[in-house]
Image (tube, rainbow, N blue to C red; front, top):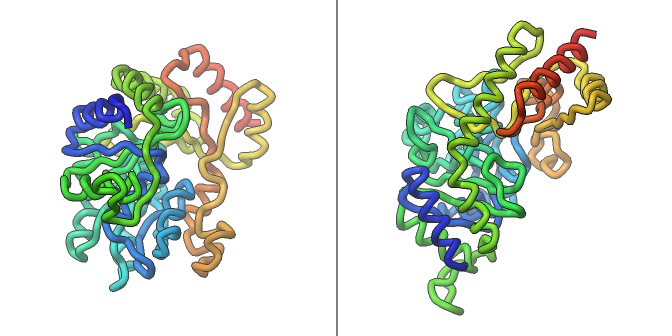
Amino acid sequence: MGDQIKELEENLCKFTGAKEAITCSSGTDALLLAMIALDIKPGDEVITTPFTFIATAETIALLGAKPVFVDIDEETYNIDVSKIEEKITPKTKAIIAVSLYGQPSDMDEINEIAKKYNLKVIIDGAQSFGAEYKGKAEVHYCDVYTTSFFPAKPLGCFGDGGAVLTNNSELAEKIRMLRVHGQNKRYHHKFIGLGARMDTIQAAIVNVKLKYYKQDFEKRNKVAKKYNELLKESNIILPKIKPDRTTPWAQYSIRVKNRDEIQNKLKKAGIPTAVHYPMPLHLQECFSYLGYKKGDFPVAERVSREIMSLPMNPNLSDEEIEYIVKEVINATDN
């Protein structure tokens, strides 16, 4: 809780236009803090996507609430808003929209549903810091926005770190207490909370990186644009970003058949690839108690079999991108 923590929180507010920013120990703890602050309790239901990193649903389960999954949109890989309403019950308390690979979800539609049923909206922006929806940062389209500064994220520190952003000062005050074991003053605990402070050294690192983040954001978009141009004539399914939103391209993910074979060919060519994510959450052993089965969310299942991320960082040169694309096309054609 050194000076750099307060400085980073002020800088995050300036960058996004949020009223309040509270740093914390990780993107996972950011989600926990958000849900505890919104009074998500055992027996409550929270609607989210099965195609995301486990932290999104794991944090719901840790609070004793029930993750309720909704299939994804085949083009954006985000939650399919047309399928949310049918999953709402009297126990539903919130919707967690995940900005997968950095692209915001359809927030107007989500907020319309939330308003109709008096639900809270959380954005899991672990991969999307800096993204905008209709010209504004995502924090302006939810009750609470959470993000991660894990080193692999577009804006990463050198260890673990995260933040919670909101325009609700009352919620922010509660989250500040929850971050330090629910304390409102030393050794006086108003709430059951967490030890979820961000290390000051990590805040100092993010403070420096934030100064260059806008240019990194633009460079990542140039890399993605170059990939798109060079791959547009191929038979590969490319990422699609809706025109009313932006993304920091946390990943550049394509869809291919015979993924394992293609990954092996690329590995031999010295090109690393990754799969985000190979198994949707409803099929994970830890969520077997929810009673989902194979076939329940066919789009998420299909995408998880085909998705593959190519190298993506702001410093990729044109030559490197051209080499990667050439090898990808060779691997998929043969």
